[in-house]
Length: 163
Image 1 (cartoon, rainbow, N blue to C red):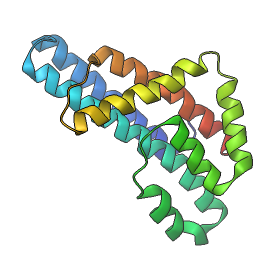
Image 2 (cartoon, helix red, strand yellow):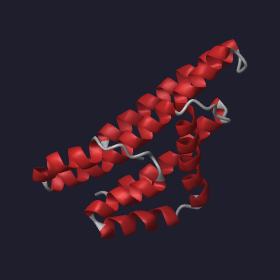
Image 3 (cartoon, rainbow, N blue to C red):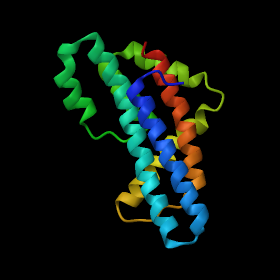
């Protein structure tokens, strides 16, 4: 479970919205054009949630340790465009602390299905980029939602080392 309140609330809000969207898709059917629109929207919402959450977990930790870093952290992490990928989380951590980066990698390595979890980040990010650049996505709403749940395990690993 994620302890960072803001990140947890962001994830909970996204999950609640995904539940509402699933209900709409179930009512209109998966082949209805509205379902396609809602699926694309959900993909962007999921990726935004993941990006906001990992940045918040990292930024809050370092701002609590050194409040004077606040403007730097805001400029170079919170407001920076960094897609939600395992590699970008490692890079962001490495900018602050190579020991925490190693701890994070170790925590992810300890997860039973780490390769699938990392791949879930990659799939979501790739498909979001496809949609953002005008291409279609091959992910179903259900697959997308499942990948989101998988990626949260990596965010939980990140959160667990930021104490």
